[in-house]
Image (cartoon, rainbow over all chains, first blue to last red; front, side):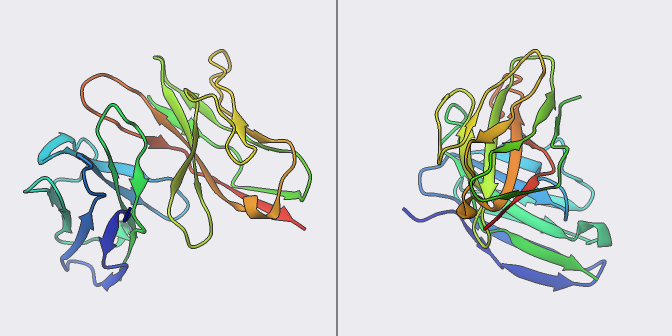
Length: 114
Length: 112
């Protein structure tokens, strides 16, 4: 089966610019996650969707980050405006649901903010 | 606070030597613990979880609630085991969250 797809793979922007990342989960997976992985750290959950509803966004910096999953399938994560400290790899993952815990990860988008 | 600690950033061993990647967690409830692995140029993927109590690629991990540890072990390392290993905790606090809290990772380098 096809895995989690993400685009773009790399993005370089200047601070204060906007950027958006796209994720398409594995077909049939109800739960979608966005993680931020800063160099030298483990992934940190930003937001979790169950179908098109937000389950957990407690660590999402809502003043600049937003995410949506309008039709309960693919999702977009946006940063506006970007800061230097947003430089990281943004990982998308999906799982069948809450009861089945294995999360399948995408290749990630590497963001560099100059 | 919920936390996962992996004290070693890098672990270098020779092929055939035993491997132990350390993981300690901080959580007052009954967590679910996982090991994820990322091979060079590949995606992060699940290696094993404590509830399965299985051996994957020769690796095992036992949850020790008394020591709040979930160390990953393999008796004889292979060069293909070289990768980044992350320990992760799901606090399972109720509700629909399936949150994973990751450690900072340990890079395992197996020398020939």
